[in-house]
Image (cartoon, rainbow, N blue to C red; front, side):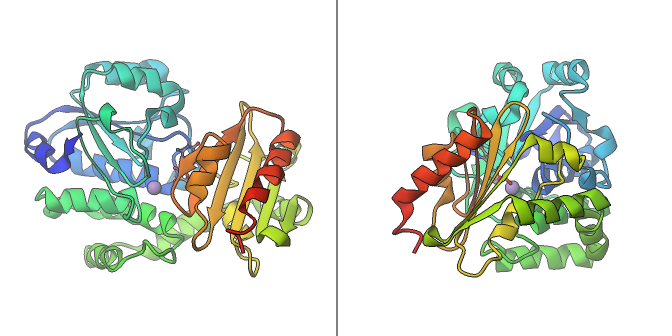
Length: 335
Ligand code: 5GP
Ligand code: MN
């Protein structure tokens, strides 16, 4: 993978571009993809954003979502764009399997592949150019740097600003995590100077749920949470029945795992949800407990030091049992 700076000259002549991101895109995945989209169309490129799957309703307000192609619903359209693309941007993920069923199609592409991402252990050989920086708060911050550094800061319009702000806000837990650096705040100040309305974005993302989602949260906090004080760990498991009873849709469970860390003294929060094909874990930690390594070692996952995910193909009950066995090895680290 060559440094992304070497790629900048290629931005200057019109190309057919595909931008893609990880499955079930979150605010940072969708924000960085659409932020880049709104830059590239101004530079005269023909651009298609392809999401491997659908996304949360609370991201639907973002400018440009109406043009995003959901690979699972519009496979033929997506494959046509992939076949004719000159450039492929991969944002907010760094191993191709995070694009689920899109993976084999991305692998076969002849296009020049560019990575912009902040997760650990990138699959560098899969990309021609790129930047991978785990110190960055978000891929949106990196797309902002990409735009400024490549000399296109004058193209940051209201749409670019709104999209990029969204990912920085969601990936930093509204500017509270350590990665919310001075540079992040300088970026936001710049976006504010350009007319960004941050209040509306916070409302769109955090105050746009239906009643059922709040009641679901109450139900699972009351009935599905186990606090293991000996390990300073809180674990929650959610069954298919819980999801059905409260009509839970993509995005409704986002942020739930963070609530586990709101209990005094709890350093490690783990949430497992019984999804259709697999049991999907979300791990969060405070301080020096490395959930990226934990996810990699025990649950076929990965992510960041304090936020990671994983999976299991065993039953929900057995998956939780396994968690309770492996956590014993970490007794001392979790004190
Ligand atoms: P979340 O819990 O919000 O789904 O994911 C937390 C972080 O871990 C995100 O940065 C996400 O990209 C990463 N992540 C989630 N699941 C996986 C996984 O199965 N494999 C890897 N490598 N990273 C994951
Ligand atoms: Mn991200």
